[in-house]
Image (cartoon, rainbow, N blue to C red; front, side):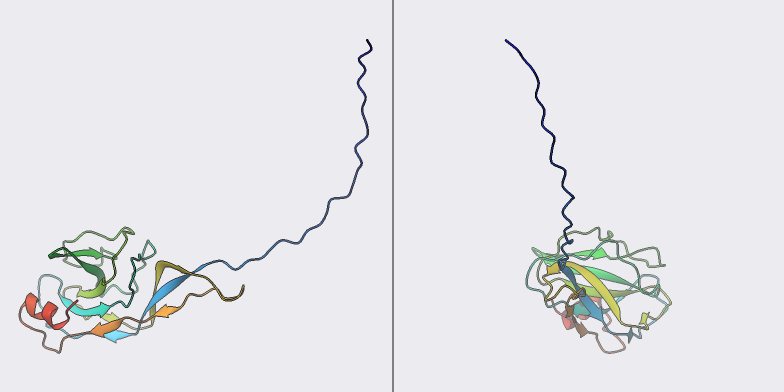
Length: 176
């Protein structure tokens, strides 16, 4: 028996040039906060809650982490009811706040979550520009050039100045 290897030349073809497909990527929804200034009774040793923003989202959601603080004069806190208690996470820290609650690390937030604005002692909470907070909720774009998500505008509840004298008075004024 003769075992010879036979080989054939592979036909050489030029590579086919294909166009790269460009598809639209999903985009994130954003919470949009208008500029604000909340006057409150200064001189307190601890941080105080001065406003509550109701977020109109009916499904579980999250905030893109890490959160960049738009101002060092306040701390934004997410709050939601868990059974009979209220759970809170501050979105950033180390701006001089006196607030002993854990920092938000990307946890899923249930429907009905609100965003509270807490003071930094002896500073007026001030936001001088429109602040967009990107969320973890994704939205399909309508065209390939559509890259920004829809804006969700939360509803503001700020008690009148001077605020109620008790913490319960503040949170019953702005129920959630």
